[in-house]
Structure formats: structure tokens, C-alpha cells
Length: 193
Image 1 (tube, rainbow, N blue to C red):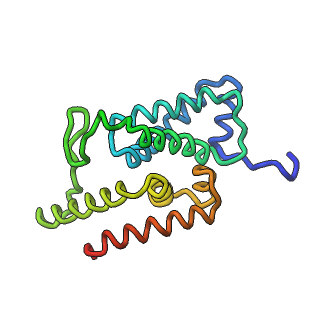
Image 2 (image 1 turned 45 degrees about the vertical axis):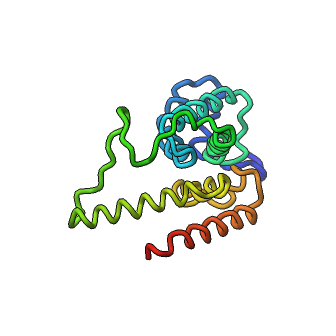
Image 3 (image 1 turned 135 degrees about the vertical axis):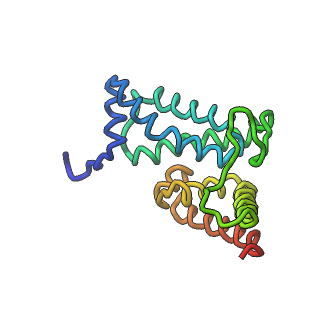
């Protein structure tokens, strides 16, 4: 390898094996990243059925792109770029409207949300759940690009450079998006302190 070669992360190595026709490597990537992609997309579109459908589409696109895959960035950066693009398109097109369901409603295929047993009292648990719900709603109310940046930064712990590549913008634009998003969240959630 020459000086300009990119050091490959394990996921990129797996994807290169997929490119060579190794289906088992794709299964490893799917197993490793499926859950985080579903959770990320769910936080974007606020709908479990749509999130699962979009996550399937993400991995279908990854598989279809195997022959042209080049490890120019971390695999997760590429993966979340696809996920973000699909989630933003879904939000723009209003595809998730037909599945409208609220975060606090229980559905047949979604178990009831439960808090950890360490809670000292029922009242404190209710206050915590109300606060978490308010944070979720505050994040969900952000403009789509700001929401995507916050979710990648806080929940997926991606670096600014990775988020910039996913959103196809500069690192300074990501910092600006995050600054505006966190200011909005701070203002909206200030009464909770």
C-alpha cells in the first residue's frame, strides 16, 4: 500500500469481500448494523413500520452497490449517508403519513415501553418518562437536517467529518446545524432544568 492508501476499517474490509461475492460477509454487516440503522431511521421518521421498511431499503441499496463500492470513507459514514438520504426523502414525500402512530401508543408488534426496575417510586418514573417524551418530541420537531445531525452526533456518536460526508456539506455547516439544533432544544427544554 502506498502513502495515499486509506487504512480500512473492519466493516470496509467486509464490504470489499461482499464486492468479491462473499454473501457471509454481507450477513455479518447486516447483523452488526441493522439495529442501529433501524433506530436511527426511526428517530428520523418517528414510525416503526416505516423505519423497518427504510432500513431494508438501506441494506438492499448497500447490496446493490457492492460492485461499485470503494472504501473512500468509513463504512458507517457511507451506510448512514444512505440511511439519511432515504429518511429525508421519506419525510419530504410524506410516505410515513399513512402509518401515523405516536411514540407513546402500543401496537401489536411493538411491546409496551418499560422503564428500568431501579426507579425509587412510581411518581419519579412518570416524571422521567414525561421528560424523555418531551426530549423525543423536541428532537422530532427539529428541521429534518438538524434532526439528522443531532441523531448522528448524540445517538450514533459520529464525528463531525462523518456527519458532513453523510449530509454532503462542510464540517463548519455541520457545526452550524448542531449549534442551531442544540440552541432550539435548550430553549424548548429550559423549563425542565
